[in-house]
Image 1 (tube, one colour):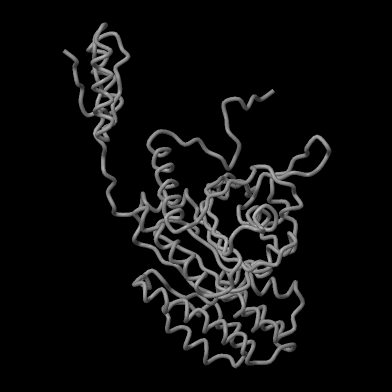
Image 2 (tube, one colour; image 1 turned 30 degrees about the horizontal axis):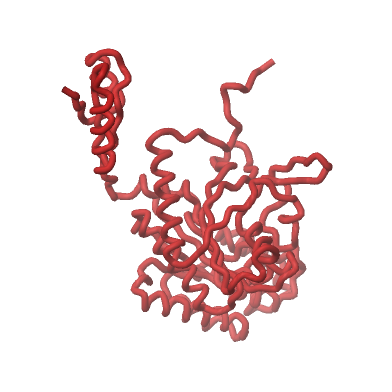
Length: 392
């Protein structure tokens, strides 16, 4: 019988040494960025009841969740995201807390991915949620905090794409499609699959007017700089769609006032999770990273499923993707000096005092544990230590 003692599950990985240190450093930078902006940190349980994630606004299919039973036979899951538990907190323990409620987190989430698709099942997610206010000031604060967090981590080559959930909803509702048809249409547009989208709309053109067919075909192409909003405005007279474009424009202008618009672009074909998002949506990308490094938006309906009606907006950062982006960037990481202190029997006090002195100066310092100076030299070479200090 095959033993799995020496292996780890698919979708997980061991993280060692310098990579582990870099990850903790990035997490601490993100946490500091949030806290310095007035966000309060929370930690939710790794195990939650399945019911927490099974509402109509759920963004993850139940077969993607890791499930198990408690001692009473109730279904539990390893939390597949952090926003939903925070919505639960906002509607229960924090419903009487001062609002707007500004919360932040850094925790692992767990999602079952198809075998061999290159995705991790255990993901470190760091983010913020701004709850209890519905205006563009809140949307802007979340986006700017995200930009500031990425810059603080050492990234400067990235883009945040802005979209709006209501733009697609307004256009597609004119066609009176059934939900299943809307979802197929959404997937083609989201994936920018022009051929499949064109064929799909040709099949349905008898049921919808020519102008709606045209704008839906154009939707995946509506991405680029802020001028793309002018082009989109010429394609429709739908008031909801035009209001969505105006919201994007206003958010862009405020971020431009903060001199951060160089990190922004527009993508009106961003139409993910329509049952979840209700307003501004955004995603961040960096060279060399396959998926997005940041995502978020306004989700005003989620907290209602826990018994409280509160507006909300937020973002989540994929910490492991940040590490990949930093490895691919041109920024050079500063190399810390590393010292090994060699001492003989009876010299521990002096050696320890010297180690404390060096560590307080920010130098990585080890006390030698080998029996001879030759062994100490060999250890320092293998470990990559810069210098050996001998206590005389």
